[in-house]
Image 1 (cartoon, chains in turn brown, cyan):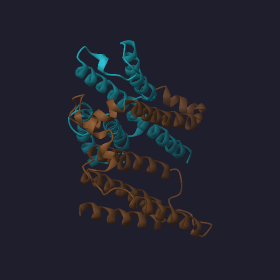
Image 2 (cartoon, rainbow over the protein chains, first blue to last red):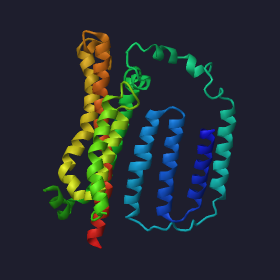
Image 3 (cartoon, chains in turn brown, red):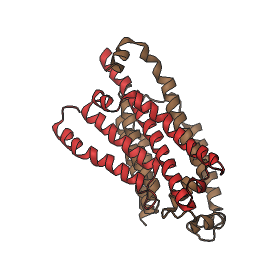
Image 4 (cartoon, rainbow over the protein chains, first blue to last red):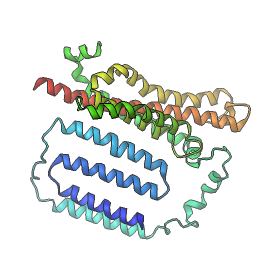
Length: 178
Length: 144
C-alpha cells in the first residue's frame, strides 16, 4: 500500500519534472523524487540503500546541480525538434521492460532462484557480522566493492582532469596559497 | 546565504552531529544499516553544508584541496592494501580470515579497514566534485 502510493507520487514527480521548463523547479523536483525513492527503500526494508539515496540523490547531487545552474540560464530552451522519436523509443523500451518483468518471480517469493543460489550460504553468516548487507558487501563480495571504490575514484580523477585546467590563472594560485 | 543568521547558528549546531552520525554509521555498520559508502556521503554532505553556510573559502581552510585529493587515492590504496596484507599473510587476495589468528576476528578486522577505505574515497570524491563546481561558479562571479 505504502509502496504503491509512493510509486504514484514518484510518477507525478517525474511527469511534472518532464513538463517544467524552469530549471530551478526541475532541480527541486528531482530532489523530491530522490527523497521519495529513499522513502520507498525504507518501506522495502533496504535502509542501507535509502541512506545512500538520501545523502547522494537528494543532498549532494541537488547541491551540485544548483552549482551548475549558477553557471547557466535558469530557463530551459525550447526544444528544436518535436520529441516524437525519443518518446516512441522510450515507450518501446518501457514496454519491453514491462514484458520482461512479467516473467520474473513474484515479489518477495522465497522460492525465487536468487534466494536459492548463494544467499543461503551468505545467511549462515560464517563471518559473524550481524548486518548481512555489510558482510556480503565487504567480505563475500570484496572484489566487487573494490571495483566500485575504484569506479568512484575514477570519477573523481576524471573530474579533476576535466576541470582543473583553469588553475593556471594567477587568482587560482593565490587561492591555493592560503 | 553566508549572512543568514538563522542558517549560521543552525549550521553550527548541526554540523558536528552530522559528522558524528557519519562516524556512527561507519562503525555501527557491522550491526545496523550503514557502512563506508553511506558514512562517506554523509560526512561529505556535512562538509558541503558547512561550505554552503559559511562560504567555500572557510571550508577550504579547514579541509584543504590537497587533503581531499590525497583522500581520493588513499581510500583505494587502503582497500587494495588490505588485499595485499592478506596475500603477505599467506591467504588469497582480499581473504580476511588470515588477518588475525582468530579467523572471525580477522574477518571483522578486514571489513573494518575495507569500509574505512571506501569511506575515505567516497568522501574525498564527493568533496572534490563539489569544490570543482563551486569554485567555477565563484570565478564567474569575480568576472561579472
